[in-house]
Image (cartoon, rainbow, N blue to C red; front, top):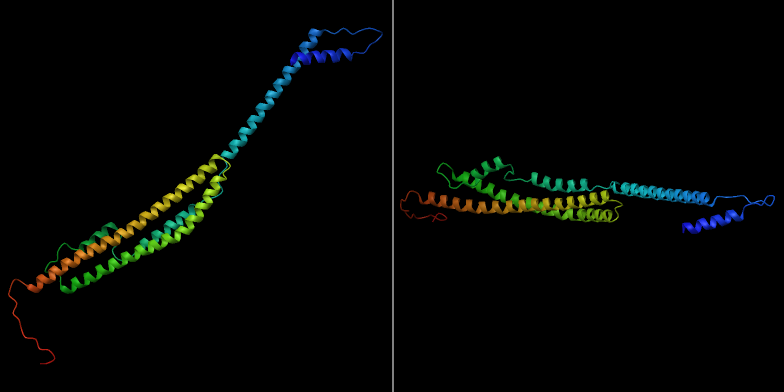
Length: 242
């Protein structure tokens, strides 16, 4: 290709030479060929440099896209949903969620056995408190269930936004950030499931403890009724003054 260009250029130059006084201008073909080759090499180098600059510009554009941050965050919505469920648990009535306080109350209200020092009125009061603890635990569990249902609509909207933004991400950073937020949504739902499981298990445990305490109270009432073993003497009962 280069030889063909040189030949054509030489022919054009020779054909274009003016004739002056019937004399030909002497041209060195070797020197002309070298000049043409130098020009061709220079042009090729310039083209290569242009291509390199174009590649560098494209690389910078790709890097800019990859570093473009996602202009959306679902963090506030996720934290709000967790906070709402956590508030329901903190507002729960009945047996405390605090470990040390709960242990002291549990030992008092759900004793292994009753002593003679505990009056019948106190046992009745404790039984009423245990019943209320079971009721409040069930109420808390149902509240957390209702909150979880309310969060479903918000989760669906958040999931749709994150998936759309992940699919339309212009760079690696946006795709990564969208994926991280999807993982955060999954983690929030997992935490909510744990919260719900805790409240349900708590209600079941308190009800079982209440049943055991009822059985122990019945045993103590029966023991006090029977006394120390003195036989019971039947007595006539006067109904309606007869």
